[in-house]
Length: 216
Image (cartoon, one colour):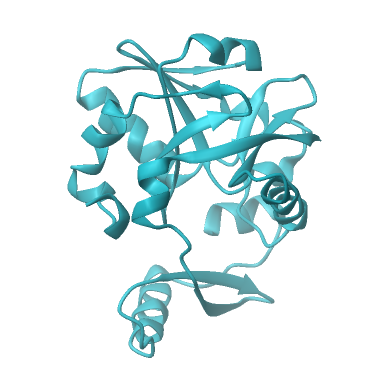
């Protein structure tokens, strides 16, 4: 949050101790046993908002089905690299995908390179190599993406950040997406390209930092 605020020229005078206290005090007011929350910075003040979680064991078992969005992301847009409330186009494109029977959508950038899904980063596995789109393609470099990459490298996997086209996905054996709420989540198909293997996802979700109610 501080990095984005500084980069976008937004005043940020909140110390870590103040931020930590705000989150802990806000969580004390939450009544639900499980869910997600979002902390927003507006006009120099912090706001806490609870979020519903739509992920489930049945969806995890099935795997996400992704449509390729007709909208393109512009890789040079500096807002791509910050988590902001400017997500209308993502919501709109995901709703279009759901209207076609998919769970979400995959964005390509203006050059036709794979970028990210509506609300998650994406990974592909072929053999012992894991590929993920490079940040310069125009995607938000999520914290879960970074954590997964670090764990994979520590476990001896080769992790490659690359510019991938849709035709490059044909030879991939496995696909999964990540964000801080869902953790690693399997993808069943992108349009007509099917990914049947789940071995790497199952390896990851057995680790403490990636466990969620839907992957136990």
